[in-house]
Image 1 (cartoon, rainbow, N blue to C red):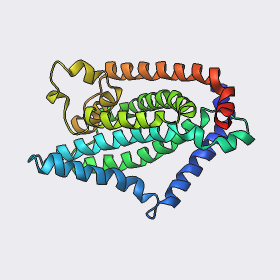
Image 2 (cartoon, rainbow, N blue to C red):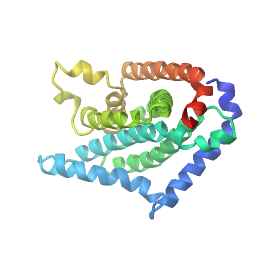
Image 3 (cartoon, one colour):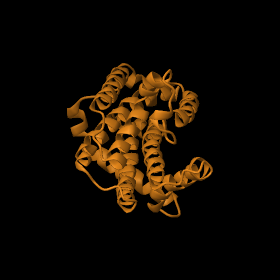
Length: 258
């Protein structure tokens, strides 16, 4: 994958992203409103289980849960949409030869646009709850970029693997169910046992959640060391995806159509 290739296909990327968003909104009765309601409903459920039942009803905990759920749905949703995107578009690839990695990128960008819309609502809610903007908000674009780099880096190689091994998507889904409970959506870093803390901090999803929460809740700068680590993981995965794409790009159609 080269920058000049992305530039050459930028119009197709933009068109396919918009088309996917419109298609998803038409499939839902509430249209675009569902993009906001979905994470809110999940947060209400978690708040009832881990907030009200545990006696923690503070506005800070509401924002804590909501931020975690939205970041989780951005990462998990983008990757799960991306991993099956190549297989879903084989009919197009049989007619028009295109770089295979464009399809997971389109799915990731569509889900990222939904996340950005929801995130604006989250910022508004944070202000309503009394958590006001600070200088740390200036680092939000950096956190977004690092998160997107990690998602694209992980999504491309996984989408290529799933094209060859469709059953692999079940393993990915199971791993994400496990990560849902291990990424700190409904518990703080302080509650993680010291013996398990290195493993928790090795999870880029947990670190990205912590970065967003630092900015929105504490009004503090995110850990640039954590962001650098996440960016390195994303870059390594992206390089692996590019290498894999070059190796099997021309073999994918033969494998799927066999």
